[in-house]
Figure (cartoon, rainbow, N blue to C red):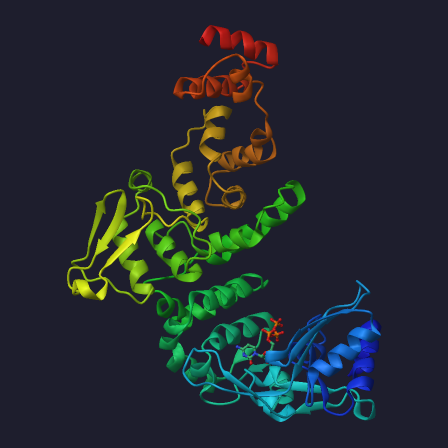
Length: 483
Ligand code: CTP
């Protein structure tokens, strides 16, 4: 099978085999993809004796950098040649799971232990790298047969219970390669579904992130829906039936953005996430879900009750959902009160001594601001738009939204073509317009910042956006009339 390996990689692997000797293997995704004749750059090496020793020797040989993690017996080598991939070295290990959905306990072992700890037979294949047997496939679990039969199959009955992320992984590989999940696995997955609820938000998000990077994401997302996976992650979460077309629109919009926009901070993965939380999902649900999936990582800011009410978010609903998912369910009697500039959540059914009050923020609990709700909010705002809208009104309407929401809306078939054109026009031109007169200019004219000052600036800028003034001098003379 070595003929399928590109020559520079083949050379690297042969060198690793020369240095590591017997007990040095190429494992996992690279071997699987090699047998499927698909390209792969993820090179994972398992060494039975001491992976760090081999990694350091390879680092020297390739003038590369070596990052060692002695506590895990692993190291990553990045060759000096930028055309060569980084390579992960791991000492062979066995794993035991003390409780479901927790991370495993690890101990050193043989290559057989290392292969048998893995998720699916198609991922439990290794290729010998030592010079005498270079290229020989090690298959202890029927992986070659499953590749032949195009089947996803775990290695033992507890696999999905030990690590429920494998439910996502099974669907991801099935969708990517067009394989089927073995009937026996379908039964095991259904049994393990309730354990998905135990996974941390971060681990779930990570799996969904990886799914959304797949070309066949709709098929994968659909298969997870057939298993009822989403409801186990977050009660009541349903994927919109239009996800396949929403995702396709998102992919096209991302391509358009990569060709036309130069914004460094543009995050394509956010566009894909927004397409997952369709316009039919209630905002409070997206927020509670985002909170569940990101925990506090992306918690950008908490906004005031007034702002929240403008966006039709129910504090009560979000709070209950969030606390439930945090494993701190509030009773129905929980009251949410505002005291001395702070929001207090008092759970009346729990004795005060057990810490029943959660105090949130500087007077703000409220809307959990994640960019994921932005697309839903934007769709609502666009619904009211009239075709006679002026450029300045478009500017004002679209300015608060993150670029990812605008990009998705610009590609969404459920939004009228003329509205999408206006959004693209905003993205390409309008948002880049620089005002003829800025706050700095007004201060130089001896004005003090005030609300009137803000209004005047905006009026001037709006006139400029609407083409009523086209020169700085015109802006100044108009300013005099405003004064
Ligand atoms: N693995 C596992 N159980 C998991 C995650 C990973 O057994 N929950 C094992 C699999 O054997 C997998 C290897 O760890 O082949 C590396 O994991 P990962 O990088 O996620 O898998 P790849 O096969 O490289 O996946 P992809 O092709 O998507 O990059």
